[in-house]
Amino acid sequence: MTAPGRRFNDAVTRFWSLAAPVYDLPALQRLIYRPAQDEVVAVLRAGGSRRVADVACGTGILAARIHDELCPDEVYGVDMSDGMLEQAKARCAAVRWRKGPAEQLPFDSDSLDAVVTTSAFHFFNQPAAMREFHRVLAPGGLAAVATISPPLPAPLRRLSVNPANPAHNPSPAEMRALFTGAEFTVTDQHWIARPLWTRGVWDLLTTGVKA
Image (cartoon, rainbow, N blue to C red; front, side):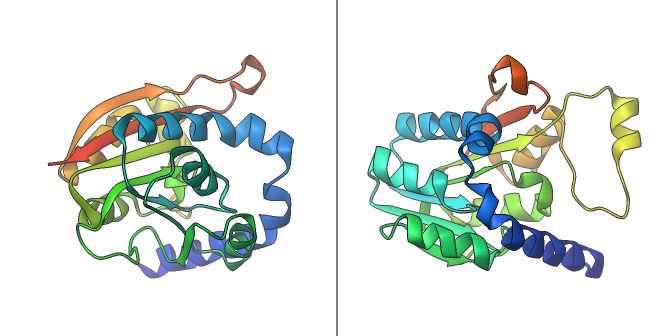
């Protein structure tokens, strides 16, 4: 990771550690985060994955849901923020919580059946994260990425890019290229349905399997 990327990653981690106390507010979760989490749970239910990691798990809401609703053999929650992980550990002792970045996951190669992440991919080094997802997944393993991806016209997307800010909201085409570039086969991609009053937030779900 480059020096600017490390500084940005550190700043994001500090911010979310400070924001952890308000992250679980019911209205915030219901309006912003819940729709993407619902979709990911449905994908995992259909796939029957037994060893699942939620990357950038925050306070552990999705990882705890995966454990409680799907009952897989192993559920891991991975995050860089100590504040988020403290709340996650208090939420569900059955989930195995780990500290680490998306680009360097604390798992052996071929050790997981599914890797998921919601509403955080724009903060990652995206090609490196996708390669890491591929590394830790067993053959046939599933990657599901729900990312904020506003459907802006190309000229507006170019204007929105700030070279000083490594965060990037990828387009649908960019997401497909990231998956195929990391040697995944894309199996589905669609916009996540949201209530009318939250349509200012656009979530794109892309799923793929490791050959």
